[in-house]
Length: 203
Image: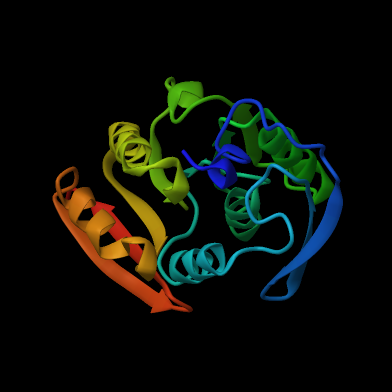
């Protein structure tokens, strides 16, 4: 794991927090997110997450949703706001990220989302989901990403879908092939800004 990765994919980020607030527009709504050092994409919502949200907006609404590796909560909070009838869980191994996500749930007045801290899907072992949103921690290493893919598959309901985004130059197509070892069908559903979004499902 590189030093960069250790800053956000770790239970103990070493850096001082250095809090800041950023804005993100989704349609007519403007979200405000508290971010900090030691958390992924602290200066602005990253283009991969933006592309993933675009892909999901065209295909999904509602249900039971998991934001796996939520960081400060962008994917899960936006998904919850788009579908007030959904139930959204956000999880992250990094306590700083999980605390920020919980603060951002309240900050954006989202009432149908809950945050838990822990590694992978362990914090939601008691739940099953219709949809998993996953912007993987690429720099944490392939073995970590593949483990998380397998855990996501295991926590899906029958007919559930995983949406994963990855940078093309960081092995997106290789990760898609690895997804294909876990799921029956993997489809590229969006591409842009140097990223690809894949939908993985068993039916």
